Image (cartoon, rainbow, N blue to C red):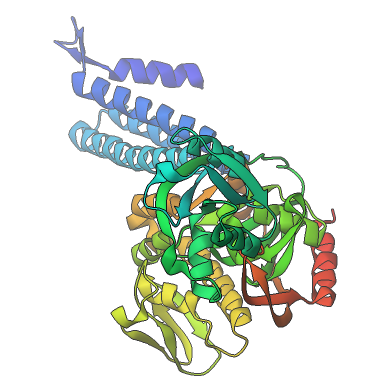
Length: 492
């Protein structure tokens, strides 16, 4: 059969011209051109499909069979002598259809391959911290003895960089108020501190007279932290961390437990104000502020609390959420609280709610645009406060995922992938994503369950124990139930 088709293809590449007694072969340039172009496109398409590895084997073979049959039929039409012109027109039409189908396939598979390689597989995460030197003098060179807060991560690296500007003696403190008291008493004449901690102190600690202190020098350090990736075949735990406008504090925390063996997914929501231990620092803090010290810090604290291991993380960027939702043409949100007006304004990258108008959210389900979805996701003025916000964020995440699976989004496919790639950073390998997609394409139905942990409202010290603030004390009954559910989903 194969030799017969090759013979058909060869003979049709040649026109036989002349009388019956003496016919000569002449190369059929149009047919040769169409054949070469379509074969090249078919080859590239199959290579991309193989690289993607998101289609089950039976579907790959079906595509190969369809393309082979279509190509053979196209050549057979060239072989027909009766009504030769009409059949050649049909043949070239089929060649054109194959060209268009393969071109579209090559484009979309190529875009997807590029997206997967670019947007996954991160093995290191980089973040920056800004430190400041403050004192009561006017000149940095009048500073010779500096105190610093020992608990701040990477403070030693920052001090090394400070010493490149001036040489100073340093003294570490474990109490933030003692540090400022010694500055006032003249035991030290400078304080070296992380800037966001100092700004938070100015807002929350009123017993210190900040007007007499001057910022004398800035030091920015870059931390390149390892974010190891581990499991891929068995059950995995993924930490979802949603950043707020500061790009350092987290508004949203979730554990995603995924088991490909039983096709189960468990979403565990955790309030951002959960006040829990960071073992490596021997310090408690609210989840909201831990991301300031790198993605590994909240992961370590949650691993300790839930007695699990995180295999991967996803850190979501608030700004790109707006663009993604707008590209999708809006996302549905179902309001079960009754109609309400948001306490936050519809603004981006700003906490001054006087700069925009509030959003009216009617009862029931409705599609909202990007800035509206962001405003709803930020809302805490609902029954349950931050608990309600975590539930709303979870609903929004699921609805975005479902909207992306809608084939109506194909027209904006590349733009969606571009916005999606800007939405997050992650160390999830692309192979895990393609394996999950292959399961969906194969018709395996995934069962998604949700749960949330709770706690008691309280007050305590945040920002690594430097300032008082609102905290949520974990309700260990809900935590232990969540742990059991995670174990259940993780079982083979």
